[in-house]
Image (cartoon, rainbow, N blue to C red; front, side):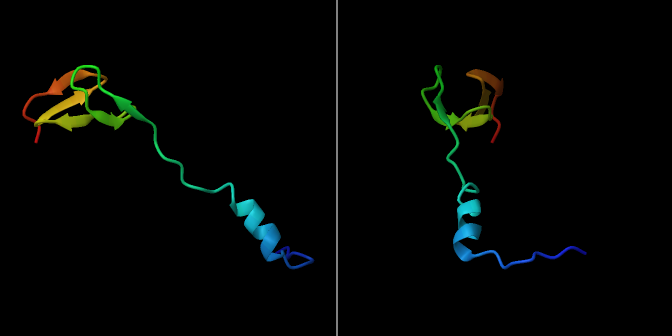
Length: 61
């Protein structure tokens, strides 16, 4: 198995890891209900399931 010739410094390691961060998901406002929700996700409003602003299932939860 290959091994590194030199130890990777903490600074060099941390510079590489700065790109691995959690980003917030975009939020959209439903044109019909006015509820904020995650984009491209189904969402429940008053027991009804909506997707893309359209009613999908009535009395879902």
